[in-house]
Length: 222
Image (tube, rainbow, N blue to C red; front, side, top):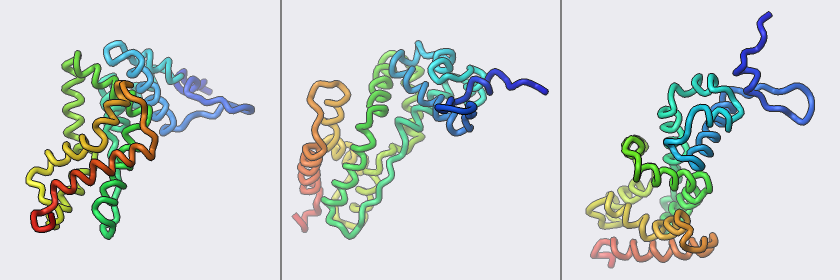
């Protein structure tokens, strides 16, 4: 009878007692992405290697290559799934626009301000400034992800219904993000300002939303 392969024997989790339990495919994939995230944020893309990711994940390099055929493919998946993961939120259309938009931006903030996403974003910003290959990778994935934030869809709905006057949805989306989450996110990324509490952040976003909506109401409603 053949003995277990080295990759199978290494890719196990040890419970507090009893026989080791072999990780299933989803758990191994998640562990690999967790390790890639840790290695990227600690060492950067250039210094990261499949060897270091294997060591961090507690798995064999052979197992890594069963899921990802190259370092490039692994980090492409990491960025797409962990940094550019879609944010799904559907406001109640019967709510006032200010309440809809505050709920939407609060949902985005909860996703964007998680520790892993912020760490990945810091690493990507650093890498794109010095590594053309990573810069192109991030640009391609940004387009592929469809700009992940659902702000544009909401603004398009309001504009088409005549509730807001928005000549350029893309510009308005960037403006709204800057007025609500841009400053707080910059503070989180650079550690240049104390983090706002949930209540303080909601007050800040509500203020930006009021100003934004007032500036984009149709003339007849102003």
